[in-house]
Image (tube, rainbow, N blue to C red; front, top):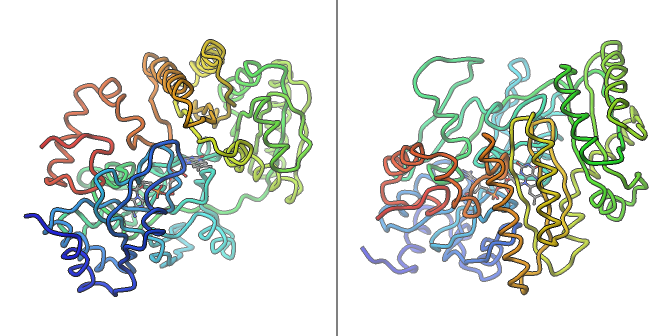
Length: 461
Ligand SMILES: Cc1cc2nc3c(=O)[nH]c(=O)nc-3n(C[C@H](O)[C@H](O)[C@H](O)COP(=O)(O)OP(=O)(O)OC[C@H]3O[C@@H](n4cnc5c(N)ncnc54)[C@H](O)[C@@H]3O)c2cc1C
């Protein structure tokens, strides 16, 4: 059936208030990009639902008219995830931003998908609780679940997949399902939470999430340890982890990136390869762990370690780390951000970072190396001039070199940012025949290929 935009708009306006359906040019443009270097493409229509019923009606209409649909959280993803290359309807979840229920005693919270992580943490603080996953952008819980996001605390608490207990999902035909329950564990049925988390809007729209939260720790100590070389810093992390020291955060920031941190955050940290560390727990046990950690970093040529137990100084330290990608963006006006995102077994990490440095030199590219190194995940941040075809080609070549290095050592092309369109070309190499299983799952759940088409897997018509 061939339908016009006008017919789709009028159908949408018959099920949701007129003000929530728009073709305003500025709003279309806001939904044509993410925060990456991938090129823009406009949706035809943007809708702002407020309830699950409205999302279900939108999917029914999309299905009836065979119009593509892209779910949109905050558009902070980095691989073109939300760019509607097939046009159609973008569903913006920003009006579905209620914290539905805090189940304090169960350490669970039920939220709508448009709730952002900072909004949730502000509310949870009243209960002495916090939500652990903290990507560098103030993303929505829906977007974070859809990309299986992680952040600085994942080395202790895990990724989004470890937090999600249940998702309410609207499928491509408008059916509403729940993928889990409130129980701490379950052996019942297939693990649909695991399947839908990380599905990047290609299998359904999340309309409610139940996630795990944690008690704010009794005592927290943060530290900055500087090293002569990146290799020393990485080897120190590997030794800390292998010694079984329970670390809550450990982030690598190389020398170039420390300069960006100081420029952007008005700090005066040493401009050397640095580890940002955090320990959480009760004071006595934690002091023992820290003493042990100090011995380990000293044996890896640590040149200085400074501790922050004061709340304000600690917050400044982590804010500076969180703002790092934006520090690069603001420090290079007119250029676009390309971030690599490989993740490897921890024993392969030092080699992978050394290889990334060599590849940067070989291709005469400048890039900062940072990472959630406790998970074996690191990023190289490149600022690219999109008018310079040679620079784009070199950046692509660089990305490919380090992805291949990771895949050959049992790693993955993306530790946390997701596939979108940027990492699609590596899916076959990474998953082999398992990619066919993923294509079959997509076919069953979305037979017309309407949901975020051609992301993760290509639609075969
Ligand atoms: C400066 C910066 C730092 C970052 N740091 C990190 C980091 O440390 N760790 C990390 O993991 N990521 C990081 N990211 C990437 C990004 O923030 C995450 O991928 C985040 O999870 C995206 O959330 P969002 O709300 O912006 O989602 P969007 O970008 O809007 O969408 C992301 C994907 O989720 C889908 N989606 C959105 N909402 C729904 C829904 N309700 N139902 C179904 N699908 C949905 C979209 O279709 C899309 O495929 C960073 C990004 C920036 C710009």
